[in-house]
Length: 398
Image 1 (spheres, rainbow, N blue to C red):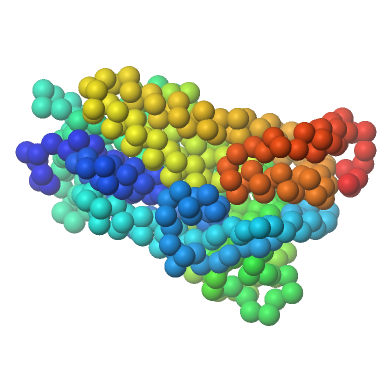
Image 2 (cartoon, rainbow, N blue to C red):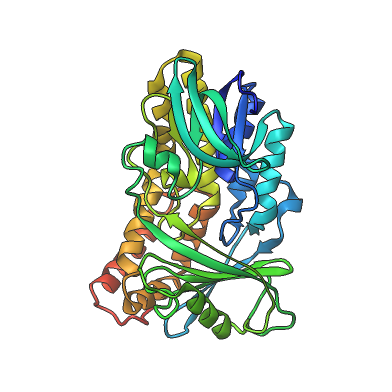
C-alpha cells in the first residue's frame, strides 16, 4: 500500500485544473499533500482561458495553442455579430496537455501523485482514509490524511456522500469533437471563436467552434434529456463547413451550472471546482473558476490545519462567492432570460451588436470583475434589455 503508515496533511481527490491547483498551492506552502488522479480522462471543453488566469496562475506561453482576437455570435436566423477583443486576447489550451502540465507542476513542487480511482472515505482513530483502486495493480489501497479536498468533477462522488446537497446539483451535458482544423476555409478563422445560439443545435444552451491551433473543438451542451448530442454536433459541423475534417477524439461529460450552498462537511472535507458546482452560467466557462476553487480550497485547508478548527473549511466558499458570486447571479439571470427560445436567442444576439455590451462583456470576462465605471452605458444596456424582454421591439432590432 502506498504510504499506508504515513499521514498526509491533505489528500486531493482529482487531478484536473482544480485539484492540480490545490495540490500545487499546498505543496508550495510546505504542506504534505497527495493528489489522486484517474489517468487517461480528458474533459470536453472549449479550452478558453482569460488573461487573468494566465497571470494569476503563471501559465507559460507554450501552453497556449491559439490566441483568439474575435468572438462571433451566430443567431438562429444566421445573423453574425463579430466582437473584437480589444487590448488583449483569449488564450486557448488543449485539455489533454494543459491538465497534465498542471499535474506535473504540482509534483515538481512537492506533491505526491497517486494514480487510481476513488472509492470512498473511511474514518477511525488514526484519521481519515481515502480508499481507492490502484490503476496498476487493481487492488484497493488507502491513503491516511487529516483533510480531503474533493475535486473529482461534476457528479462528484465525494460531494454526494460527504456534503449536504452534493447529489442535487443541476447539470447540462457537454459534448465535443476535436477535429483537424481546416485549411483555406471561408467559414473557419483560426483567430476567432464562434458561438452558435440556435435551438436546432442546442435548445437551452449553445454550440461552439473554438480553434486549437492545428485542431479545433466543435461541440454543444444541453440540460434537456433525449437530445442527440452527436447528431447536433454533426449538424453544427455541416453548417460550419467542417464535416470533412478528420475527427481526432470525441468526449462528453456533465457540466454543473450552480454553485452548491455548502462546500464542506464541517469536519474534514472541502469541495473545489466542478465538484462544488462552480461553472459559470450562460457561458459555461469552467477552467478559471475551477482553478480559483482549487486555490481557495487550499487556503481553507491551510487555515484548518493551522488552527485545528474545521469551521475554517467554510472559507473556501466564502472567499469564492465574495469575489465571483455577483457575476454568477448576473450570468444566471441572462441565461434564464435569453436561452429559453429561438426568439429570445435572436434578441440576445441583437444586443451583442451594441458596442457598450461588447466592451463591458469582454472587460468583465478578461478581468473577472463587473465594470462599474460607466453608469450611462449600464443604463442604456438596461433599457435595451427591457425593450427586448418586454417585446417592445422586433427580435432583430439592434
